[in-house]
Length: 222
Image 1: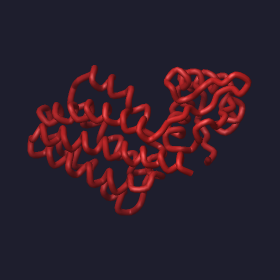
Image 2 (image 1 turned 180 degrees about the horizontal axis):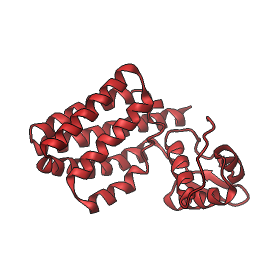
Image 3 (image 1 turned 120 degrees about the vertical axis):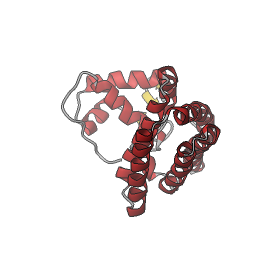
Image 4 (image 1 turned 90 degrees about the horizontal axis):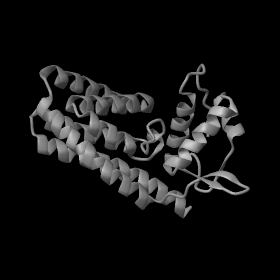
């Protein structure tokens, strides 16, 4: 696992650590059952042990870590079917938001989405996975914002914790899949077809979940 430094201390430093570890676990950077030591994580991320311990407790409450007597924190066991279940629920909410966004999108919104999509496709073409991850995140965030439902976006946040944004490009097939799926979502929104947008977004989320689930299954088999 590559060393990553987190910038100057902030009020929510423990959440930054939790976010990094959460995504790393989902991307397979840590294996199920692997011990997670606060001191080692603190050294790796250049933060003190206190926010790391707070992050570990939060991840235990979320089900990402187990606390084993005399062993400390270990990565919780998760299999591909768990991932599929999580992303099935994620897809329902994301699909509904895409349908709502279709009904509310202005010409300016469509232009912004199209610009993001072009940037995403360009990043995929040149193999710039870091830019692809960023544009993917911005594309989804804009659609969900256009949808206008704060409650649904809040609910979606429960599931997006399981999306390893920083590490997704390391999963085989994700860059090409996300570029193709976004085209279908954008086309449906642009022609004002809410139900097609719902289906395209749900299919996109399920496809992403399947790639992640297969990654988990390969790791379990190994």
